[in-house]
Image (cartoon, rainbow, N blue to C red; front, side, top):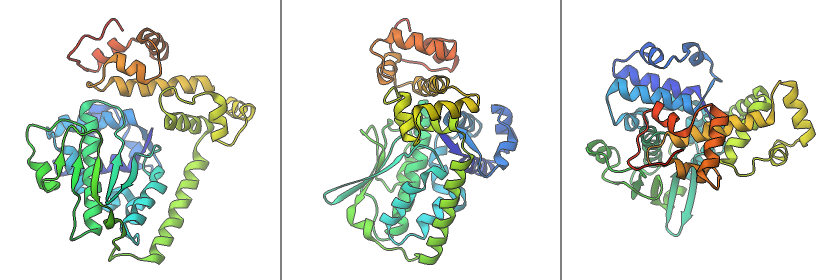
Length: 341
């Protein structure tokens, strides 16, 4: 998954409020500061989480994710945020977020589910370490809560669900979510009265919204033009996840090409489909292995391997190391024995 540099800039702005200069974070992570200057720049999820792991260490604040979500301004999310702010209704705003999510991240993480009198804005938390999964969920759900309250001044969500366990101190959760936070749930998301979807914004500006949409479409088009075929294949594989539909034929069809055309275009870029596939699978496996709550065996099955030993061989071929050695090198600790893999 590739993530807009805008979200990295948002992190840097938040660190300034802690008195931490961006140079400190870049020094700790060996991140090239010049990348922040490119408005169309992207980082991988692994790089994104690496920055946040060190930000958590530098601030010493376990509630950093809540503060990022609460303090973010529309400028943090640029066009996507302004499209929401100037939408006619909450539903229109959510639909705009879904339509233009690629300006912020390649893979959609937002889904609106309607059932009876309730609506739920679901957030799919991407794999990663427990700290980063918690932080990303906090940022997203604090943002969702603010979005709903922006439209529904006289209403509020009925539940804010987190998959992670309740923290030792819940003061900030209670303050930000007004006592609606619930932990160890089967999903991450915000539940609210379905009728709120039709609430109209007092700041709706149809002409401005149309102009913003036009600009957003141009940005999406520029993303597509600038993307190499190797990048497009990598994105298509990431969206499919695990081992599902990773054959070259299905990916070529998703890109509107024949297998022969895709192979030729990748060759012109000096790239190989199967090398990209291995890199995409390796990146996903690393994200899953970084999650302390998931065993190596569970990761193997999630990745589509019938036996952990097959996953062991594949991971070593992809990365040159074993799953166990990778976890040890990244300080991932499990409470139970994981076997020889």
